[in-house]
Image (cartoon, rainbow, N blue to C red; front, side, top):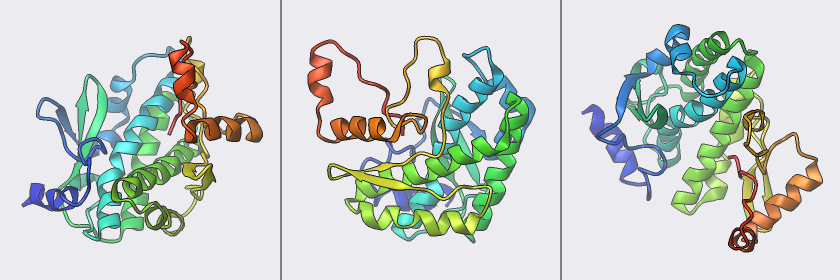
Length: 243
């Protein structure tokens, strides 16, 4: 029964596996409650020697996966629980790749607030990080996942229109999600920085909020119009698109 609940949602979503709604058979699956354990979280942090950077990058990936089942249920009209007790997260090579909800949803905003607050607190403790920037990452994950779900369904406007009222229901310190349309394509106007460019050899994300607004918009326009293909053919790697 638990698997069939999410299966009913994924059946309505083209590319559900790529969206992080199907756990690979080879993945290591952990209960959602593990993410609220600072000790467990600290053991997952790898890469940068700065624990704050490592924790931020980890939460950047995990938050996106964690909110996907409940948002998918919201978009297709089949509510799925966002409670940590009802969630499991699949990891492959230490990277979160999918999440599965095993129960019907209730008050999504209330459940999301409780789950995000618990995991944000654990990540902040594990990485000696402030909580507010982690909440900003959470709002970008929410906005990005609704955008991706809308693209999968061919109805970006309806899906992204759910972001603001849901975030308002969750309430502060979750910032309001934002979007911007550039050259006919919708992007998340990010509230957060993933700190990827603090890792040696890694670029600044194309959509990084720390870029000058005009520079960011020009880069997004190039991406929207498909102009990076020429750059790649000429051997130049474009900036990371971020989310």
